[in-house]
Length: 203
Length: 224
Image (cartoon, rainbow over all chains, first blue to last red; front, side):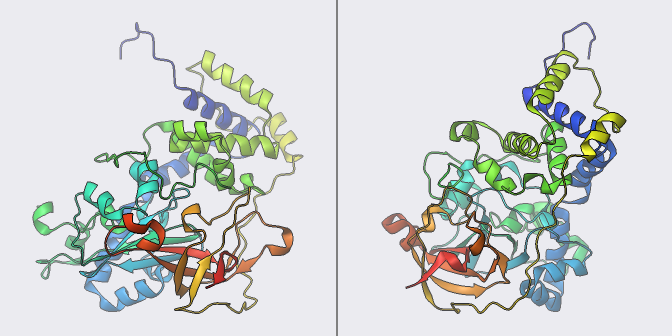
């Protein structure tokens, strides 16, 4: 960056945020370090990689899969992930006959403990308004076309329960290790707008 | 409230826009707002963070991004709570507008911090179900009709469900009602997962083999 150019003025939300942060820190409500640590956690510690580990474990361990479907919160804590958000974590399994997909029409509720912060499309007015009414059309926009024989179940996450989807294990993955399987689990497959990747898609 | 946030079933918002390899935050301020808001979770009480977002005027809600809505509602909560005043916020905003290179302080200013201690502010822990053993009114398989509730305060019963008939699919743990209801009606209730057929919700325009599940506090349900 050259110093002789005038810098673009910062957008209003950035300035307003600085003003709020400055006042709250000066007043001793929290410190700059506390806020840095939280931002760092959002960016590095939480995210869909946690959910992917849970899914891969469920694919290789049928006992774990059953525990996960019975009580999501307890099952993810076995993997070292704390779910301290909301009331329950409920996991639904996608099969050849039933396809589950999650939306929050009223706001943007999302299982942070396993998927991190939601992507922008999940919070978009288009997704929130349409997923409950025309899920097949919405899924098609994600590249997922489902046969009419498949029951599409949309879960509107309106209470303090959080939903995660356990995608189907792709064909041709029988010999793969748990670590290799983790690579196949996309964020979108755990929201239900996609399927897990095939080995060919990641190689 | 029957607000703009209650979007299920609305037309006109266009296709889903996807972004490859999206960053967690697109602008640093989004992360700061998120972190500040989560550091003092009790700041929105007694209204609730979601209600403050829903209360953003509809035109402003629609033209604001997700984190802009967080910022607007966070500012609203801080002002309502008396943690900051409108005057000092505007003054500080002008300062950072005129001094773009000025750093945000890292530590408390002793004099200001002292006055804050006199402000009644506590972080309220979320209430846990008290396990008083509520007897559920409905059981799995029951046919139920969603109540037609139109309150101006917060509710978790979306418009597109009201008056529709579904089937109880599952009973969850009790949860406190989140709606802005009179004191006598607050407290824990059985929460049900209720299944609605696509045609019941969307009539002939429903897609094939489409069902919807939604969480219903018991007071949202009537026997059918």
